[in-house]
Length: 381
Image 1 (cartoon, one colour):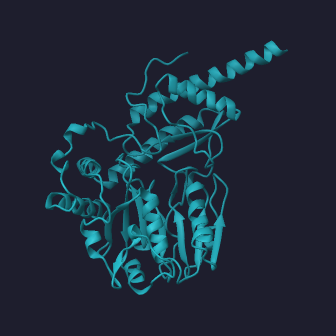
Image 2: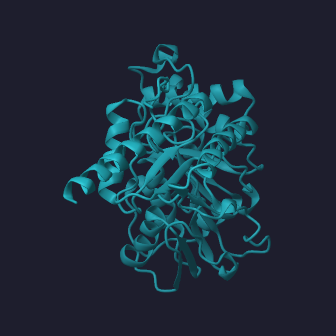
Image 3: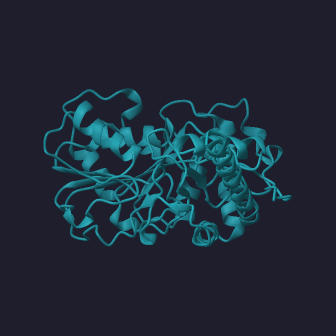
């Protein structure tokens, strides 16, 4: 039967993600529009984005936060090009973006003392192989694979290297062990449903020490430079951005942070993500034609949920198009390099009743596709 109830919001994209519940652009502080980011009002807003991020995430004392160019990608590139080189490197990947960091390190920076620990989609590499004397680069929550590390226990408290964590699909969705993380990057358009083009860079005191004690052999573009005369450019972590940010996007991010505060902070956003994942897990457990790409529950993402189907890639594309045409699920195709299936964002801004309303439509679309295939087979026979 064709379901009658549709999600109020069919946006299940894994980035940019659904806006927060009740979002209204008219509610943004539009006093920032038309003002310079160097003016007091602009600089104060950018500084607030940094300080509120630190407060809501409960960052340890001494950790610094900056708004940087080019989304999570820009933040990661900025950190790797500025700090990698003085120590051996273990780079871990199990999905597209982590693989990209490995390629940057080996093919662009051309560093030699590098170990690549890789796993296929749906799995993790052996985390026990990580050397605590090496710099470690990894993605906490693999957006394109639906696989995340289970915890931070595998990161040694006695490590001498730095940990570089791409956490764009994990910040505000997981309780991160901040004292084990030295460089953390994320973007506004993921768990908080903010706007794109801006990244967040979080540095531990150990990361700052690396910046102030090490100068790479290669030239650094202006947008990567975080030091001046051998010292950290503190202004960058107080709202003085390297390039011109969108003040409308800044206002939007502050609105998202205010929403997190209003619902109970990070404890509530983590709870919302876990609840949404549980809804999908219950549905999958009742249907044998759909499964998680991450079969092991302990490494399953609670934001970017990747699912496989007992359909051909062509049938899967048809199913996705059916759902899009019905306007019940938009942008749920898998990442271009990932296995065929569905990718459904379950982050904190996705309301559980919309996710529940989607599930009968998944079953309906699957039945439509398999029925059509059966009819074609009968005609051919």
